[in-house]
Image (tube, rainbow, N blue to C red; front, side, top):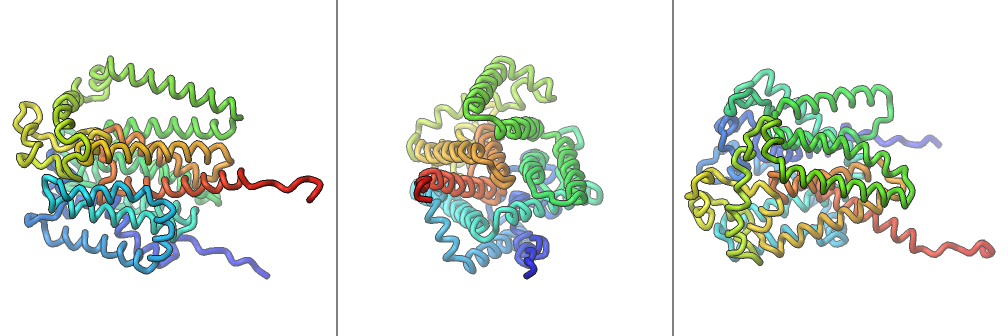
Length: 438
């Protein structure tokens, strides 16, 4: 009997249904071609995505369509999604806490809206883990990356007024995105996905190499120093991982110790020579005003240390506690803590920060278990996503933000690694039959 070969993901009707919401989240809820008022605005921020009376009808339709599609597919696979969610309930702790924070939020309407959106996004991530097999899931997200790359090049070539940013005195590419930094950092995630995507045929490998080169060019031309650094560290991670999985147990301990020492050394160098490094990368010595942010935010952390000011409810301009910063010389345009952990502490306090750190730590432990047991490409990809999530937690990104593909990537990686690590532990604990009884 002939064995039936499963059809590739791009031939599934469901793939094309999901392509729009996945592209929407990849662009962080704002496309440069219909958000021209933000594309060359130096003050454009993700926080502006919250629907308000000033938003266009087109923007609201785009958001409604994206969330409508994901709610529809979740509903059609509700029981299966709930089953996976129950096995990984801790990943829902942050979205639930975000919703509860509406009770003490400085802006209850904003917190409630954003918490609902990030809960839907989390549920959608769980659905993807339930609905798609491992290779199919990475192929799906790789296809989304290809679409984002293609549309970015089309925007740069044919609609440069939206695809190229001119507000910084240089022509930085931003493609489908409304900010050059968004293009650069999201492309780093897709660069990792392309690297680990299955490549069975010579032609597929060649096309994938061209695709990765196209991503790399977008990262470089975005002129996002953060994206440059993340991409460089990701490539170093590729090298480390490829060697790590070949080592024996004691050799892995030595390798991890060496990496830890190098990381500490890099932190010390950055702390002592950060200004000089910033200048060498084309930034000002204070990283364009970021150096004093932590000092300015420190007093605010202790005003509501346990529960925070509410999810997405600290940086509200002249409303609430952020007014203290807005009226401080040098911080009038501050809309972000420029650090994922610090941002979480401001919004959800020590409780939310503890949950965030627990998720990251558990992901690291599970990644270590999986890498030590003959990992597949899919598992290695998930480990790379955890690595990038760790970087996002300490750079200028926001952890667990609605309308972002980065949170979707993290939830998928967390669930996949947790379930794979559990299977490995269960297999190790299963008693083997005695030789004489076999």
